[in-house]
Length: 428
Ligand SMILES: [Zn+2]
Image (cartoon, rainbow, N blue to C red):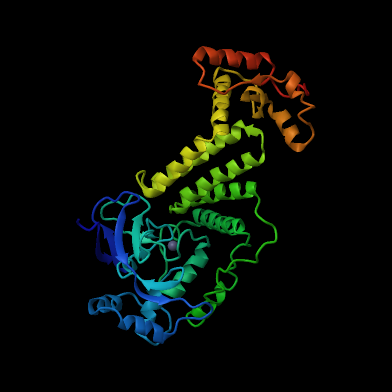
């Protein structure tokens, strides 16, 4: 198969990698083996002797390719060490070199991302995360993605470690949009750290970073703040992933994290609903479906609809859809929507209380007004106060989808029961 890319001069950047045809998101642009493996040893920096040993193990052509890579601007006396430090990738247990992927230039809003192959950990793929037009430069982020630091911090890191002034579209934006982008990235960073129960990243030493202090300060720059004593609650977990996903999209930082975050919003909502025990909130169910839909949409956006990632998200969706309590709620939701779509200006029904009746094993749903539902949640009212058994309309929504006529009858019953009338009626 013809290569999807070519290596040629990139204005102001030396060499660069360019698309030779239109590339769809999720396409594997490059596939290459890790070279120069060096095992990581906790709390100890790699020595020059270890790097030289790894270099000596390369084949003659690979040695030549390695020596043609960019040296960056670190102040090591040996060229091999400078090239290694400028181009090394950090895996979980080892550092390694990718000769081809190292030829890519950087963008803070890249169009490709590195993706370790699941079945073979010694091979790495470079995947398109956006549509890349023929002739367009293929760029990835040297910072890793998503990278949640301000323009100033990103520029300083790139200048210190790689020796160039980033002029990507994000760094080069006008002052207004750049300030917005910086704010988004700060917020994104804080949310992602908070989900892991850490304070925001600490960049307070950034002004002290120069070629002399570069590797001395490396482990301190951007280190997470203190471990927080307060655990992240389920509603926070849900909301923070939701915001993180939206911030990534607003920043055009498309990466495999995007569908992952939206799927977690769905799962967080599901956990919240399950913790509510016998209460199914119609709007929550609608939201659950919406966010799983967002996971499917964004997965197709960054990986293509036929990708493994998209298949995983679809499987999750199908599993959730198949859950019996949600299947029932979906029918209640359908009814709820029907009520609204027929021109009703009344307050829409908000919650459905699920009551499982032992006799006959049938399920009944009590539809509640928003105000009553909130009072119930706040503990201001009990189910007995609402006289659910005696007064509320019990609605059996189990079984097959109703016909149009049956549906209309049900809607009529709901309206007749007074449910869905304007607020301020007081408890029944
Ligand atoms: Zn940039």
